[in-house]
Length: 153
Image (cartoon, one colour):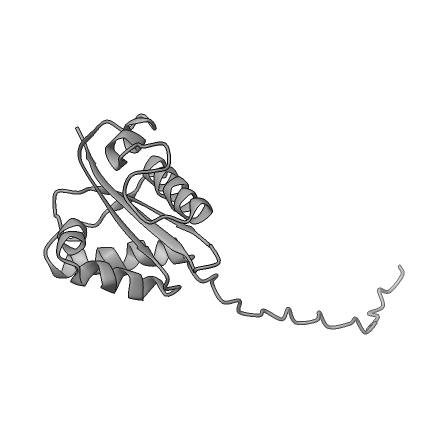
């Protein structure tokens, strides 16, 4: 009977896998606005706002319209107010509000400007609002910001 032989053949040790921690991508300025507004709302006993894609679309389009046509206001270049723009998306609202800003690039500074403004501050801290959309558009004068707040029927 053959005798088994043990062979000690060296094998290469497996190379360790190098894991590099990657930083999570920083949220965009629109998401930072929503986060800051929700922080303020929580501190004032209001529920958090949920982002709604229809409101985001309205906000982005309004910011782009203001930036492209160099105006600042709640009525768009077609003569529609915020309620009409929101209705056009199919969002059936019972309450709607809009805050706008221009000039500053810092999302936290924009929210602070809204918070300290009499009408705008009331909008962002209105506990009845449940949804939000934020849009930003750049222009030679700086960004145009629009935040649309709403509550469905």
